[in-house]
Length: 483
Image 1 (cartoon, helix red, strand yellow):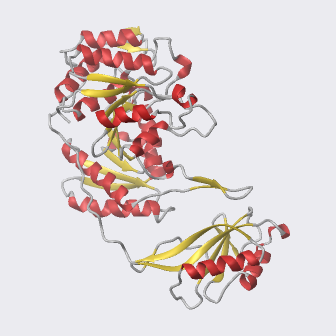
Image 2 (cartoon, one colour):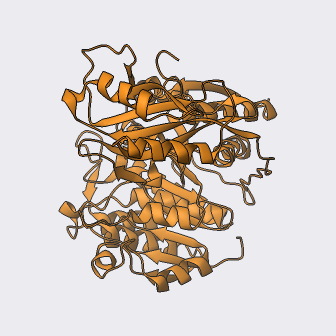
Image 3 (tube, helix red, strand yellow):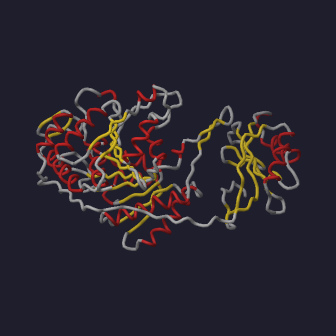
């Protein structure tokens, strides 16, 4: 990447054009040696008929240049528009989202003056797969997809990042006390991978208390690795407690491509007023320059930016009368950074980057596990007979079972309702009916097809099935109450 000098630039929506103009002016003044191919993305492209917010021609430029510096965009409400960020991340294999958070006291107010935290967020999987279905009149589902190679890749990346940048500890955050198979797998892989990095301290937090630690004791954390949704949430918490969400940048990297941006949105309410803080996008640009092998230029600009903060030249979002010297607009802030190129901060810690720092991971493909089908969950849309679970349960047991697959239990919203469910349980029209082999034998798809036919003939509306598998003899599904 060190020889690349042409990147793709997207000015985005809202405040995007203003902060991008400021960022490019600063980079050009520092002679970073980049040329720019500008593409149109966001609201205009959505409304022109491209549901993902980007045109095929722009994809060609992105793939050719491999690096995108992107300002925030606006996604129109309704109409089935897809998230542009998610689309780019998945399409270009940008599996790692790296978000550094540092406090800049006393120039930017923060309760945590020693905060210096990096969140490494898985970027392609989890609930951000965006796979949702309305299955009954009352119930909608979303699929949380977590893969073993995807988890191992981001966890290894976090440890490699810590090692490359001299970090001391990697903390994993999951909710595996509840989601024992999805989050449980992520935690299990973390425990396996950490053994290969004895030089780096490691620990694990459940995400709810982990989020509280980010908010209340961020100085106790160093590198955090977590799943997609959790990483998105705790990133905003970290940005705010560090001083301002407008200050944080983000790097999205994969094997061959990278996208660099601010973590905040397009803020259309303040667009065109020359008041937006370009610091978030600038921080994304610093990471981009390091990625491109231009660490010296990243160091030059970031130190000038730190000196600007230190000199009290602040945009309105971080301006404080008792701390700041001068309140400036977007353009004037960029001018101030340019004026200080070549200077270093005197009170804040100057940044130092090493050229040639690379974070790369290798996840070898593992042999497939032995998979055995032991049952099936059949989901049924049913609201007759005052939703009495005994009615549907007895009918499915007697008329909707086969010799190979018999009804074992029914749950509603994950709570056992048949047999012997509590009468106080609130029940929707969405019923999970678990079938297993009465002799604990392995079954096959033909057995499932026969069962579905039997359920249909019994007059029930089946809406979904989930096969129950053992992998290398280990259960691959959650148990219900009473099993």
